[in-house]
Image (cartoon, rainbow, N blue to C red):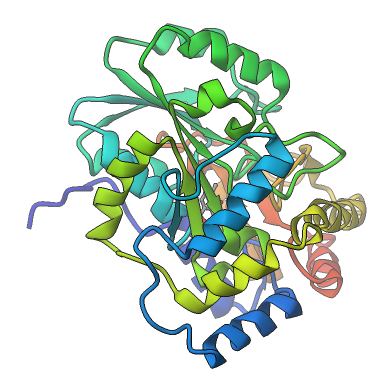
Length: 378
Ligand code: PMP
Ligand code: GLN
């Protein structure tokens, strides 16, 4: 058959996790926690199953969950979202992004993507016949060069994709970025896709610059979230998309004939769990503690840190250790030292190599200690 994605291979997360297993490495590569999800949430899922919530959920999602999400949005961002027409529950954040792109992109549309970029974005654009327009984030602080963005806008620019907090770099958008974004899209019909799966994992008291804070931007946006990422249950693959009613209508046309609806008991459980505001307010301080613990330990190594302001990743340069490519370096330290990471060049179409690798610090302290013990020898 003729491939629709001829340039796509196996995702780096699969490659590095398989290598980690093969070499019994400590896996700080693929992003997932190695500690349990909240017990109260597990208990609520059990309860939901025992109470018989085991059949198809409604196609847009379990209504009480959508209401809890709307309540959270009002509380955090002071924006009113209609749970009936503007929120759709999805099987994960990745699916929400794919569905949004598929709902709106026409062949030949241009989509601005910042690199390093989460690895599903570009294949999702290309499979829809649209064209990714790639812009490098400035190295080493990974901020957006808005002048450069302006120079890449054409009459075919259909969408800008944002991701804050950012995977793989841990960079976050600031208020001045949002001002630049406003100025850029005003008087255009450019859409925004904002990937905010790390919404509740942002550090040092920095406010999360959600599109949901800005009703005028929300009018042109799909905003995508992941319960798996924030509640330490990546295997649940559950998330949601917030978008204006006319966008949501198109989104659901794709969703209803793809997945149709998501796992019911976890939606029933989350509806109740989210009503406790601590369930999300405590997440950033908890994860910040892990970042600080990890970066404290890493001071005893020859790796040079780049700052992480959010997500559960921190990037490090290894130029004091080796001049190998980041892929070779990451593979070699998995095999020789038993420590798996992700080479950041995997997030550039060109394979651009700044000699940076990504570590996931969403791990037990004992895992981080064991990892750094090995990294000290590198
Ligand atoms: N976007 C980014 C930037 C991510 O890191 C992830 C995590 N895998 C996702 C989307 C997708 O989340 P999910 O596992 O809910 O599909
Ligand atoms: N988002 C996770 C990461 O960046 C991985 C998810 C996946 O394996 N697709 O590591």
